[in-house]
Amino acid sequence: VELSFIICLILSSCLSFSPCFNLAGCLVAETEQANPPAIVSTSLMMPTPSLTNVSSTTPLRRRPSFHLTRQKRLLLAMSTLALFGIGMYIWIDAALKVNNSHNESSSHLERVLETHDLPTVNDPIVEKPDLIISAVQPASLSMVEEFLLSLAQKNPSDLWTLFGKDQIDESENTYGEDPFLLNFLEKGICPWTDPKITQRNGKNIDITVDWLPPKPLHSQQIAEKFRTKYALKNEETEQMIASVKIGRKTVELSDPFDEVILWYEHLSKAGGTSFCEIVNSNMPRLMVPRYHCMPRKGEFIDGRVGSWSNAELIQHTREELHRVVSNEWDPFDLNKLVMSGRNINNFGSSNSVDGSGTQKEKLPPGPNLLFVTTLREPCDRLLSAYTFFAITSTKNENPPTFQQWTTSNVNRCKNYKPGTRSAYRSNTARMNHIVWRFSGGSLPHLPTDEDMKSERGRAVRRSEFPPPVTDEKVWVPSFKTSVRALANHDLILPMDVMTKDEGKEAFRRLLGWNRIEIRKKKYKKLPESSNGQVVTVGGVKNSNARESLDEDEYRALWERNWLDNILFLWSRAVFFARLHCNVDES
Image 1 (cartoon, rainbow, N blue to C red):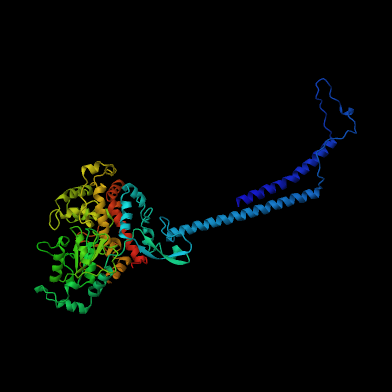
Image 2 (image 1 turned 60 degrees about the horizontal axis):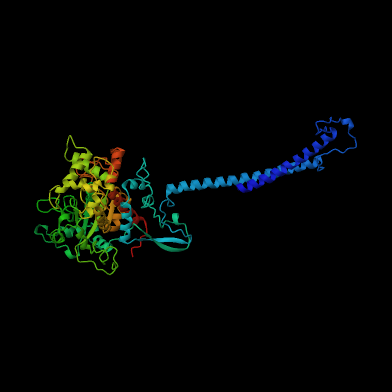
């Protein structure tokens, strides 16, 4: 458009100025004829001749005339101006069209960003106009591990920016560069298959998502058994359970080798009490341990089921009707995966999640385990643990500060012994608690002096919070193990959506539960949060760490828990991807 305008401008300018030159030439000629110019002598010794000495017959020099009449000049000038006006009209019209098109594009882009019609970061869509992605393929567990490890090996300060934590207002949850595409998934949009995004015609293809793991081995089969046996809370089931002679420790209702136990991995202050209330709303009363879904053992009312051997758990199934157990105080026992035919150690075996013999392996004899956990934003969980254990439950009038409490408890972790009362609550204050928990407790509670003096150790922001383990030789094996342990869980539920539509749908699909509610009579004196969370003592508190801490302290705490933050966001994305996308699990 600009080039056309320049050409029109040059042509019209030439044409418009040409009659002016013509008119000027004629006027000069007429002036010279009426007033002949004086002849200036070039010699200083000769006088200048007068006009009277010049012969009247000497021809005068005049500029050439084009002999244009006044009417012709006027017509040419008008034609030139008309041509110039037409050129200007064409240029203005084209400019307006370009401007309107730009405005429409800008408006469309704004609508896209509001509705997330198109991906803006790390676009996974194959850029071929003749393809539509029909199904999402999970990656191998090795690919998932490699993807997450590449994030974990970044500097925590770089991850702060990568995940958009440098925003002052996080109300929109833009997630920065959004490597897990949570901007789309949280809105119910599958960014690989949604027609609003693809808008392509042609043959269908599948796409492999680098961070999406396959479903655990035998997950659908075990879940189907669970739904068939325990999901429906009807009169017939209640009557059968009532006939069981619990007092004589005989279980007439079921065959223990055909049983399924719901194993809930309970991270303190991550929705465990709420989850147990949902369990009580959907399962027969005698199948649920009375104390927060934790079976009693000996002197321990909370049982410490995480420290039980597989044989102890099988024996408990034969003696009790409990079909759900909760582990809160001990790390996840990796050996429990064997009871569901899974294994994270032999990565290439047919029992591993990404093994080649997935379809051929038979489900081992029961009881089988169905693994469920809930995760919470790591910094918020830490603050909630501090509020509950240091203030609410102790009623301490002079409580320690958040930093003092975490430092004191982390230092006490060296005294912790699984299955005992020794410093068992101290683990709630660990940095990167998720990694410690799901690695089987292999992540140390504090770095070594050598680690702190290393380049990465010195890069940790100064704060009163305990320093994290930064030596890759130490944390990488634990991180990999935790990734594989989480990938073997049948459901990882974000705490904030537990009682919302997404949580209800996840419960229905896996467990067949339809009553996602809290027994209000039991908690009638306790305020409920917007997401249905309840606590045993003191009511729900505001545990938004970013609002409660100053910016420097919050960032220091977030960067210390960089491994947990990666796992939390990844698990959240996996949950929403399986919920909203057509994932090919064949």
